[in-house]
Amino acid sequence: MREYLIAGNWKMNKTPSEAAALAKEILPLVKNSTSKVMVAPSFVCIPAVAEVIKGSNIILAAQNMATATEGAHTGETSVLMLKELGVEVVILGHSERRHIYGETNEMINEKVKLALANGLKVDLCIGELLEEREAGKAEAVCYEQLEKGLAGLSKADMANVMIAYEPVWAIGTGKTATPADAEAIHAACRGKIAQLFDEATAQATNIQYGGSVKPDNVKELMAMENIDGGLIGGASLTAPSFGALANFDK
Ligand code: 13P
Image (cartoon, rainbow, N blue to C red; front, side):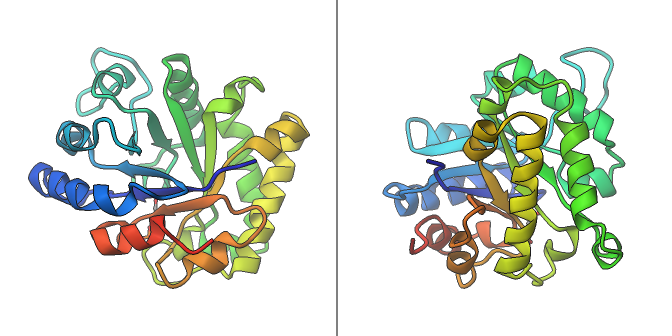
């Protein structure tokens, strides 16, 4: 059976000392969570957070990584650097990377393959823009992001891949997809994964929802059959709120 994953994407928030303080506050609140719990601080906050959560049930993630392992890539951070800091999972293809920083499906696929080849797990983000949804293209956009993002992967690789469906119009806007709308895309994406790999792989893949998930809407979203967790931005930035999310009433 799939386990729930409650993940905090801290984005470009918190200095290293603030991030360590938040991690410290979160630790006792999530230690008995029956879901898997993950946090993704910014690169420079990773060492401080790693130190605080060492030996705990909190999984350490990064928000991005470079397409190369080393060399002349000014401003980039390599998979080797992340691994040495104890990072287990890397979030790739977040909509802010795609739409603010111009990352293409092809670049994201390179990163996915590089992360897996180096022993990191991947949380691949997909999701449509508002105009794509309004044009009836939400599923088609997600299918393309899945097909291209997962190109070249084997069924065995998929054991180390999770998906986060984050409709871009719901991120940071307070507009959440209705549980039924989110479920429809999650089910469709699971069908796509079955088509690309096989049914067992699709059934085993964790697919989180992201986009204005809060303590007061988490339960109804998580009740949907194909929603296996949340990738949470704003509501992951305070301990009481993230603690409530990690302990949502199943
Ligand atoms: P919000 O929860 O702030 O809408 O952010 C969602 C998100 O982008 C997580 O990766």
